[in-house]
Length: 369
Image 1 (cartoon, rainbow, N blue to C red):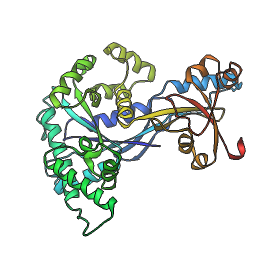
Image 2: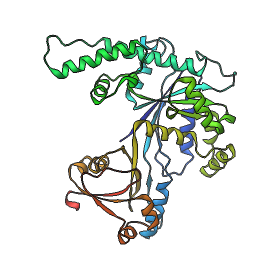
Image 3: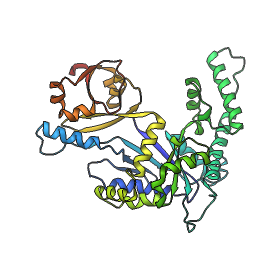
Image 4: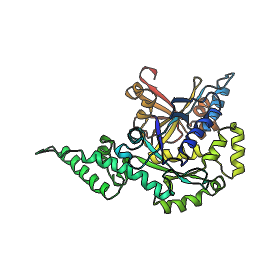
């Protein structure tokens, strides 16, 4: 499954700088990482995963290959969405385009300004808290417009239709009180209605706080402070310096690590952002490793083995028989498929197996059993 993240925010908060840095940073990595720019404001970048190179090295040794098999990380699509202005829900500025793009993404990355360079004009930006409220008010007003266009079923005895209308009226009431829809949704029925109506504020939100370079090393303290200030959970906050990400983008991978170490941080903003995105959307990865390729695949946390197989190919889910499963640590410890089999560390799992983060898997399907 693919993951799409929309980068939103008021003008001049640093979202386009961040977007451009994320894309350039990936161009500096090894050439066998997939990269594509779909159009000027959409780019696909790999999910950083150090496990893949290790698996590729193990496969190359075990199979006596003269080079590493191709490495294919999971990917994330980043969408740099047009800057918002007040009245976007009524079409002001690029409002219609802004809202249309948000409807297509899985998660909203809301960039908020907290850096001190006053040479960068504040076009509508006041402070992080006010900026958050401005953007989310526009999204909520757009949702209210969608909800209020719905019509009550007349003389209907259909329980599903009546239940849907009950949920819609609840959404309208809460939205009028200023509550985002994702704060209101408590069960599967409500989540389904929100998806059907494609409500903007039903989407999960990560708040990326764009700070000065010297503040990144104090990220943990900043998250606590800004979480209280903004009224959001710490798990929703990522501290990033768009300037640092821009500087990282021009460096080779080894130099990036040295630069981050000098700054007192262990991961780039991209890595921290993607980790938070996976957490918010309850996603995880499983791995496949063979001579043809070493690859990471994204699935929902708790997915069963046939569902995971279906991510590779829809026919795999339909024709699923069994899965050979190995813990990543065991795969490394025993040097690949042959070693884990001899050590008795390879498991044969059936249709009810719930996938775990980092499982190394080989699916058996149909006639290939």
